[in-house]
Image (cartoon, rainbow, N blue to C red; front, side, top):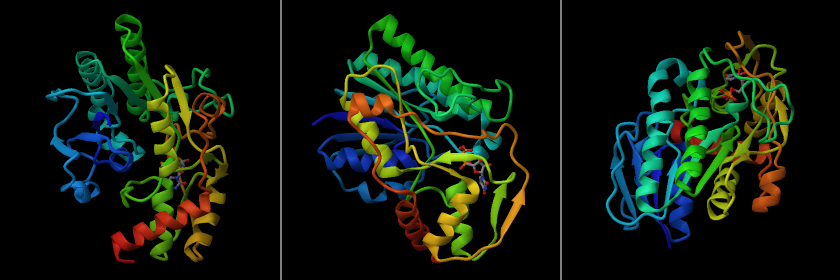
Length: 312
Ligand code: UDP
């Protein structure tokens, strides 16, 4: 049994991480300021005596009493709509926030697991993306607040490893979806499912030929826990290698929800990556992990969650 400090534990990914860690017997100290996380995501854990919630912005500081085995940094707004609304907060949690979790890990002699993102590859010219690819990021565009914050987070994490010999993990998370996403998150999977359930038009940005590779949340969390438990230092892609255009995703969502919707075409956001697919060679080799959930199966489960939450 380990004691884990988990930032962003009330968020979409973080709350699933809480569930999985508690299920295997770990103790979880969940730190979240609820800027994009939701109290409802962790309400079911309130009575668990191995779970503690601290309402705190990790960018402002992180103090935890007692022994700690692992510090996991999942806190960050991650949706393109957040990039426009709270850009400074995103830069702060990737920089000050990451510095604070590294300092706590150092003080406690703990492993530090930092969530990075496929966005470090920007609009990739190498495809699929291996961890060795340095990326193609616009450093001053609207997405840069997230991309560069995560690139900084990776850099400072590796610096703590080199300077202090801190035991670190870096996960590069590729587009992940599932229950507890915010219905108004603005991400393509949540948008399409909510639109299909409401019988509305599906909003395709651009011509819908851009691609993403969607990973179901349970697969993502299992991959991340395998990384945490490994001794692999250096970034590891965790995602699903099956790549879809947004037009193909729209078809899958309509099939999964039994909906027949019109497609409406809207402008492509600035710097929207044209393609994205993880190279999973390192995850397969070092962690013996690969994702199991097919897109349609995951969309059916996610749609059931949204239908219940929104009363549709
Ligand atoms: N997208 C879309 N319709 C929507 C929302 C998003 O076509 O209603 C597109 C978006 O332009 C991008 C892709 O879907 O090309 C994935 O967007 P998302 O925000 O989910 O993830 P990210 O761009 O961060 O990978």
